[in-house]
Length: 321
Ligand code: UDP
Ligand code: MG
Image (cartoon, rainbow, N blue to C red; front, top):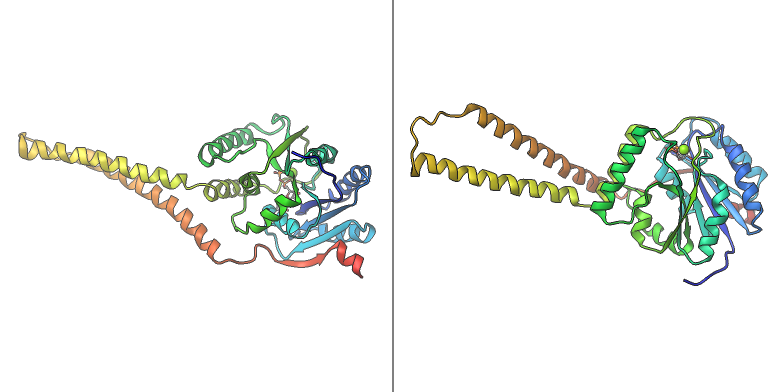
């Protein structure tokens, strides 16, 4: 790996109803970026907020020539907001981070040093998980070990969407237009050499999490189903095993009725029902898994744009005018 010189930085920040955080966030981000003496740009993406977020962002852009603002026409979700930002930046190193101060800007210099020593991707990960509730920790650890085993991607536990990608990695990432986006899988999928820096986790500065349980489930589903066909393999094997068992059972019935007829074979109502229930249960699960993939194929073939912009205010447009 060869050392290289960094000439520009971009920071991509999705915001959804973050009116209480934006000013504090930008102040702390800027205080770090200013110490670096490298040209930088910060691009905020308003993800269809219903509060004053967009107005505040535009005010920031009025006051700071480094600030660009994109506004999505409605709430498209965190992964799409990130994508919109990544599509509109131009820099040697691009950092994505949250706007609620849970991702401390203080680790940015470390991430940039890793970039300069040649890494194309740098993950900033929480150094401890203890501040999260036991339920979130348990579900996260089950999910990540599942992902690790069935997708063979180097999934880094604790790595959220706080990371740096080089221009080279960014260009590849932009080529990946799947609608079921799971950047935490898409970035490792590219396979570039990566470095990891750690930070002490913090609580949200203000407001509440936008990742409700159903959104977490959605993200986990995208991660699992778009990176693996393992669930399909599982149902196939279930089918094979069940058929084999049924075959053995058939032989047994043939034996006791035709070859060595046993007298007084009572029609076993209970066992029939049990078998019926088990088999139809497995069939339904299998159908469910299949329909997950069919549904995702359906959404993917529509080939719609991933997000819709209602405002595009880029720093370079300002330079031109
Ligand atoms: N976010 C977004 N669109 C959404 C949900 C969240 O742009 O639909 C942004 C949010 O403003 C924040 C980041 O994504 O900057 C992470 O969201 P949040 O802090 O709610 O998630 P958590 O940290 O609880 O996982
Ligand atoms: Mg947060």
